[in-house]
Amino acid sequence: MILTRDIGIDLGTENTVICDRRGRIIIREPSVVAVDVKSRRVLATGDRAKEMIGRTPGSIVAIKPLREGVIADFDMTADMLHSFIFGASKASMFARTRAVVTVPSGVTEVERRAVEDAARSAGIQEVELIEEPMAAALGAGLPVYDATGSMVVDIGGGTCDIAVISLGGIAARKSVKIAGNALNEAIINYLKKNHNLLIGDVTAEDIKLKIGSVAAYDGEGAMEVRGRNLTDGLPKAVEVTSEQIREVLLEPVSEIITAIRETLEVTLPELAADIIDRGIYLTGGTALLKGLAELISKETKMQVHIPENPMEAVAIGTAMKLRRAR
Image (cartoon, rainbow, N blue to C red; front, side, top):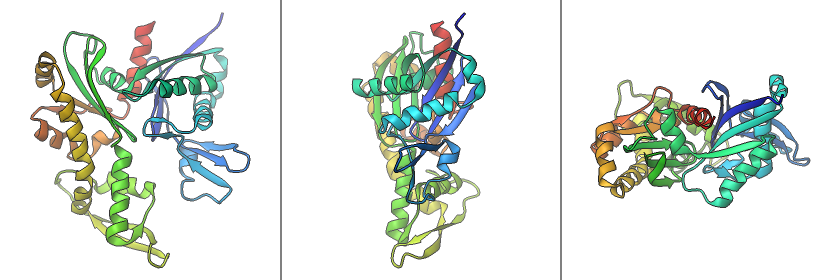
């Protein structure tokens, strides 16, 4: 008897989340690979590789094999997936692996094929793709297979996928390459321009998580940021406030809101009426940015909801897709 292992894979620009068919998270790791430059041998993946970003010698490079939701380095993506899926010894008892893997909304056929091929190169025998907003809607508990409109905005690391879903299909969609990474980049550019300070992506992410917001909030403050002085190349520390970072983040966030409004404008009137009743659902790690839900609600004049585990909604949705396929 051939045993089959069913898994769902949220293949994200920043993080890869893998769950079993019951929706239990079994892997949650950064989508990072540390590679020996000369031999192209993979030295580490996930958390271990992320710790090396900006701290490796010249012979080792820590890379992110996915960019803006699509595969930028095929071999590294396949190696990373193989490490995540089959790294645990218990995985070897399964002779066959079946997976539902996410792709951003509106990717090209070539990009879809690249994800399928990378998954198969990683050792997965059966591969089914699902668009991220559909998986997010399933994971958020929305009635996607009913004759009613549901709207989900999935804001990950590389892309923001917006979709109106009805009867198991996407009735209106928009994907923009403005998400968590774009917010980090805005912080990096601000410190470079206004404080002559160079910081890395990890530090920018830390600033965003600690004091980042798009609306005033209780307990606002400041934090010390350390980096390299662009004038003399020496280490330097500056203080930035919540208000300063808020001004920086509002510009890229306004583009996300514009994309949401544009999607609503092309939504069928009957489905739009359903969305007014049900509201908009935010998923993805950036959904947790302070004040974001309130700002979107203010600009769209609709209720905005965040599921209990927005960072895991897409992965849980892949598990629900697995169970439905059986």
